[in-house]
Length: 362
Figure 1 (cartoon, one colour):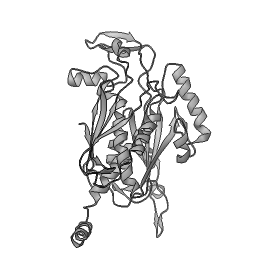
Figure 2 (cartoon, helix red, strand yellow):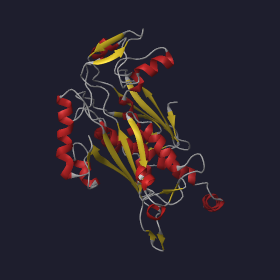
Figure 3 (cartoon, one colour):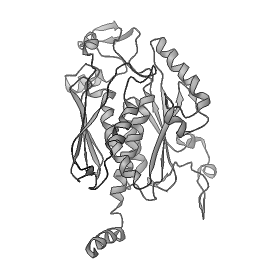
Figure 4 (cartoon, helix red, strand yellow):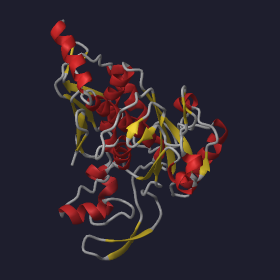
């Protein structure tokens, strides 16, 4: 499937070395102010080639809105956006035409479809996530009107963990580091791996502030389940934690329970979600990215005819995919919350009556 969401649903299209990538976002309420500069600024945060900590592929990632917007406002019809690819070097992949790259989706795509676009991974490339960021930017514009914000940053690189979580600092950090005291060590680890023709993994921490209580649909469209679904659908993500995550498994109920007082919760081990429904606290996620599988060392693999070979990769790749990946995590989180807000509007008859009685009276 190439679509995600229910009331707010988006689809993406395109391949890494095709003419363009893009998205169609359906379900955006009419009358939303569409700030094209903001949408472009979100894409600029994710775009490649900004520093030595990213792939050398330089793409402008200039987004063009094709439909669904008139005189700066959404019309309620599908919003289509396109981003043209301008800096492909497809010849770099000629040596893997008949070879499966270890750690990539080459093997599974070929065995599922009997054909694959070997140029940069085609549809399985993280290049597609630019389209998700474009869609997520529109979702953020919706959330902004409701005073809901999504932040993220890198809290771990190559096992080097942040002790502080400063989201303001992360915005200006070249690697989106949350802890300024750990940033240089994290940078050094990335460059060391890069110089050794290797790569490192990392962890993105995402926080959603301002969500009302009640978002999430029991039992099979729970907020935490869909957030995890959204994050696991991002390239290279191998695990997602909500709140304390795996630490909860080694805790006691007396410690893990978020006790409640008249002025709110005393703690937030649950990460803002109880029973799959938001409880109005900050929603907190940790998203774990594996090391970029594209490394420039000799590796063992097989060909499409199952012949064992050794090969060395060419091309331009991120030494730590988590860095730009954290921007994608933000986008997906925004899309999930915006979708849940629209779904929640009809959760009570009182809410439905309030909306339609207002229209009838006016």
